[in-house]
Image (cartoon, rainbow, N blue to C red; front, side, top):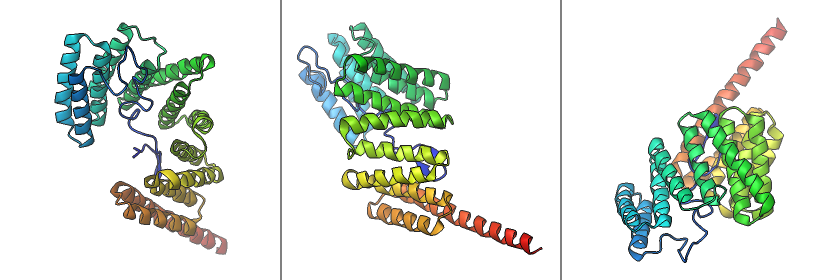
Amino acid sequence: MYATFRLAPGLGSLIGGTTVAAAGVFGLFSSTKDGESPEGPKDDDITLMVKRAKLLIDQDKSAEAEIILHQALKLSQGRQIDYAIAYVYDMLGELALKEEHWSKAERLFKETLKVLVSSGTDQDDNAVLEISLKIAGIYGKQGRHQLAQAGYQWCVKTLEEKVTKATDEDTVLLLGMCLHHYAAFAAMQGQLFHARTLISKALMICRTVQGNDHPQTGVLLNDMGTMYVEQGLYEEAITCFQEAKEVAEMYSVEDVPAILCNMGMTLVHKKEFKEAEKTLQQALALARKNHDGLSKREILICLKDLEKAENAEKLAAEKNKDEQSN
């Protein structure tokens, strides 16, 4: 369900997607215009094409979906339906993201922005901000870090100003998502204190709007835990992972192995090796039960790291003993 970004050996985030989840977490074009449906363009033939493309994407038939989307785009452009053009460009951009074709995705999302702005959409509209967030994420993937940071900062600043004027739920949650993705970027740049501050703000928003038991609260707690580990605050990290695990057990059991793995590696840092092995073995058993090959591979790597840490600790203890006896 969630992709991971690596912070340190054995630690993973549960942040969703390469930039933001496909089709927009909050419904990129959720505000309807002139009777248009948030499900897609209103024209029946274009709507059918979009629905068919979505079905193909769900079936991992991206190449076929792209052909249909280009047909839908051509029809939309011929009829000069700006809403439909933007919608299809966004879907094509998401397909490019899925294939990690960063330059192609950048071009498609910029085309989406161009259509939105030229059709009169305000620059602080949620649709514009969500697309801008995606582009910032792409810059990060391309190693264009200054552009990425500027993009994230603009999105956050604009949304923070916006929520002081209107506190509709979608806008507040979009701010939380921006803060979360900016935090992931900041962490990858080694800006750990800044990343933790951003995650804290995102977590506060999520708790307030969606509640303590919401799956996204669990995701943010996990990522807060990774921030604490990176800064050597292991007790705080364990607390976060424990809370994240409790939430995941209620709503997203597929995430429990990853959270337990993070907890286990934190215990390794604390040199609590027996408890670490117990936790990692529990994570491995759940990954096998879930037929989760990716988590299983990660956990096996963590178990090897545990063994190395134990051996290193034993060698250090023996060396210290020899030195004292001499």
